[in-house]
Amino acid sequence: MPPSPLYRSVNTRTHGVRHLSGGDYRHERNKKAVTDSEAIRSPMHGKVRRGRDYTPLFRFLLSRVGCRWDDVYSEAKARLDTTEPIFWMVARTEEDRQEYVCLGESTFFSGLFVDDEGLLQLVNPRLTAKDMTPFCTCCTHTLNGIRFGESGRS
Image 1 (cartoon, one colour):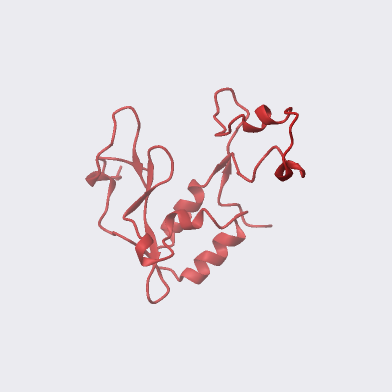
Image 2 (cartoon, rainbow, N blue to C red; image 1 turned 45 degrees about the vertical axis):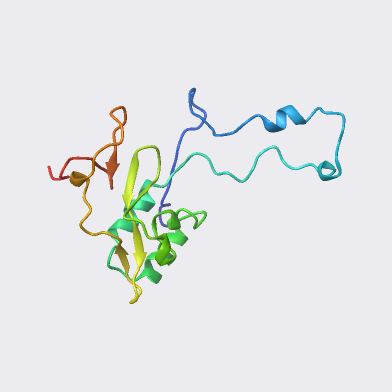
């Protein structure tokens, strides 16, 4: 049996779900004048993957802090359709390192990097949700799944 994927499919057909797409093509398709660049028609849809929730991937990466990066990366790569979301959280270079990354409107995860020994590490291991404050009162802000201002212990 293949391993379970590290993403969830989100219902994008429900009323009120925003697709982040514009009507550019619909306003252009019936124009009479065709330029040379439009001689070969491109598809109406782009390569944007909608309907993916990568929270299981982010939790997987956090659970592997201290493990060998090569092993973590190969397992994650085998369970994803693209490797791009891995590097939303894991810094490729020292300049890319961030204490936390915003992956959604009010969802934050600890930033990760690969140290000199090839181990996955937290950029700031002392950062907790208890120390963080929300940017607005209308949203529920979380760090690694724990609400801002809470200790995370039940």
